[in-house]
Image 1 (cartoon, rainbow, N blue to C red):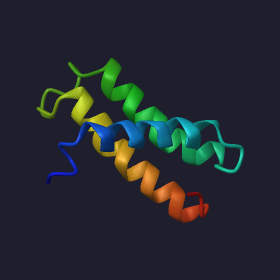
Image 2 (tube, rainbow, N blue to C red; image 1 turned 90 degrees about the vertical axis):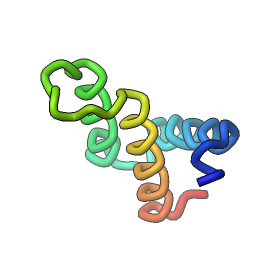
Image 3 (cartoon, rainbow, N blue to C red; image 1 turned 120 degrees about the vertical axis):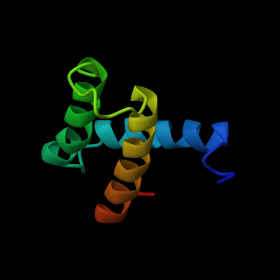
Length: 77
């Protein structure tokens, strides 16, 4: 829980995300699996009234999931 509240942790996570999104090793499909849902949730929050989770919270959860998944899939550190 302490890690999730750490600003340093989230800074490193978002740096990893930008590196993964720019990487030529990660496939376009994998990049879209992260980018499209995040973009849609930011643009269309009123269409999804049954989802009371904040936009940034969804982005942070997806960012953490994406970074771990891509680093293990492509053996990137």
